[in-house]
Length: 380
Ligand code: AMP
Image (tube, rainbow, N blue to C red; front, side, top):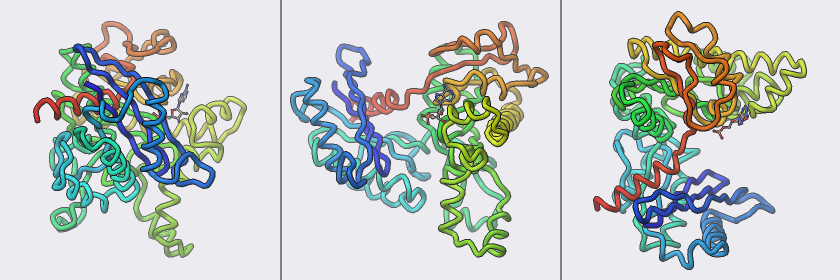
């Protein structure tokens, strides 16, 4: 069975081709079409980008024609409260995903543009939507209702939805395989976007990221938690309008805003090492905020059996992991300096014999999307 996984952003189409024949799970191709719709870029729109992707696959000899594709798994950021698991896309499902665009105006429309393009090119394949929010539909009400007048929840569906669900679900599944006794997991997805998730018996019970992907941890360009009064203060004192403030909070804040250097942790680490005090402060705030959320979820779970680091920063920066876990020994968290420094790929990084096991688990959202797609095909 050949399954294509598509992850479409507003200006990029990332794809991976999996071959699930003979009981194996082989990723046979990976590529991206960037700068969609940008003058001088790779493709005029998502339709053209999808055509380019198929051209690349055909040129590399991996497929002769699009007809060989059995299923296309689409990453869809927002599935609202309706989608608790991955779903084959039909007209009714499409309408419901469209209705979720209001909740994720930056993400769902390009996801849908990617779907329409792929559907046109591979009409015979099963198209499956895999939602970032689905894993978090198990949250209890005390974790997802905000402290607003209740009608905003009831009438307007203002609530915590949570994102990065496919990554946290992948982590939960890997921990279940590596350490079956670990029931309570704190999963730290630290990439350009960041979230920490409390998982109990394989189900998400809380997550730092909220109604939109803005809440919680400090991120590449997003502020994470802040006092909402700051927004009103800026409106009153500087006359900033909502569009300007939204842009500032989503695109000019976080690591970039504090450091003034970059949204990329590697650049910030280099700048800090060269003596840039704001870069150093940005790293410290990033790590401190992550430590606070780990502490919160240790409380929510009444202690954890495992803490996991994943995504670009979580997987690749031993220094950031060490700074986050510094002085958590009284909570049973003992990071092993040597295994943390040496860690590559999936591995354990805690001091042996300590109460909380710690893992580095490279995330693989695409594999999970491909597996879900296969499952939806096999179960009809
Ligand atoms: P992601 O969104 O998961 O692709 O993660 C992107 C983030 O991971 C960026 O901030 C990168 O700077 C960061 N990253 C990747 N490699 C490293 C590294 N070796 N050290 C620190 N940060 C890294």
